[in-house]
Length: 472
Image (tube, rainbow, N blue to C red; front, side, top):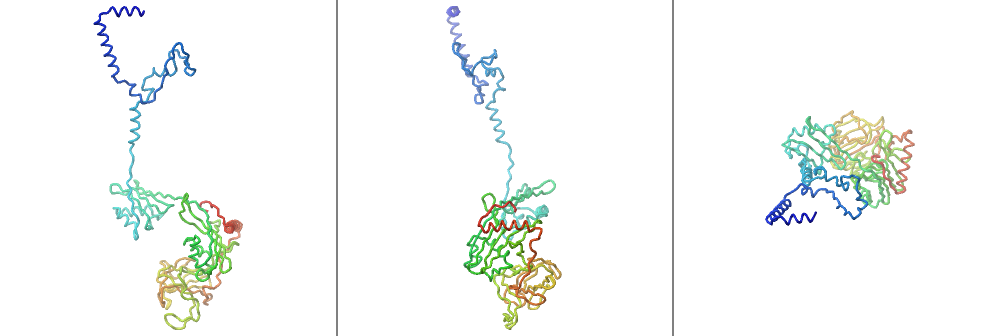
């Protein structure tokens, strides 16, 4: 066969042979230069097909024929399918990625305004370019929770304003609470977010060498914890007069955490104070109704029926003295109460539950209030700069409720509270009079209280802490 083809080629004229060679060259070059669909698909997934073994070679075991007589290998069938069904082209991939990359994103341009000293909601809205109508609408939206009623320097209000209209307002009240107000077709919707911190317990121990505040702070107690301790034990210990060198204290209290960050403190859970050799201890107990109070480890209330000191004072400027020389009149006049020196405007609290039977100016007492407690005890508060609004003669008050403010009205040489305690009309020394206790732990709560008190005192005695459940 090959010999016949060779004879035929040699029998053709040379001109024909040259023309055929030129045509073959042109066609081959053109085919090489023309683009094809397979060129576009070279960057996509391609199935590689191994070369066909030569007739005298054995195919590898993993390349044995599939049994399909129309192809050498199973994957070879792919060549018979349309290209667009077997491959994803580079242009298709690029188009998909481009669509994902340029997907529209809503950009919100928030503007922050820091709360300054003396700021109100109105003044901040004015700085943001908003109107009194906006203030009214936001106030109405938060009327139930009153979250924006009190603003403090250092806080921030964030506004989203579009085309002159307030769309959203964001306010972070503290690390645990935030609020977002959003405009809707019907007005504004309010969404409040609250986070619950982890509660851990911590113990601080210390010894008095100079003063309660100095030595307690050196031991690691914050001002807040020191004040809590003084309030819990204040019915039994006069922290202004009774503290002595070498007195000792131990405090078990809560700390609040978000993750590893300490964000604040909670309540004192147990406290012990050894004052002049006498031990005073208290534990915190929550009853079945959710009421929290402090009791001695055996269940007696730490709270007395009366506060020993009805005002946070700097010092006692004058004690109970029936033979005192009056500092203004210069004459001998009995001092039948205690004078607590404090700044003008310091809140004065009712020392016990009762009813106001006098509210007004009373001679040298100046502005004064007298409260009737039960049938035989009255207390008097004098030299006030003003009264708490909403109170009048006949008003009922609770222990610790603010009734007025320290001043120097009447015969007074400086701002202070003059406080008197009378039993059946007879003046008693407020600093030493025996005060009746409040109610102890109810009998129905005794078992639960004993269990709680034992655990807390064991922790305090052992100097160990545990992690309490959130909110408990």
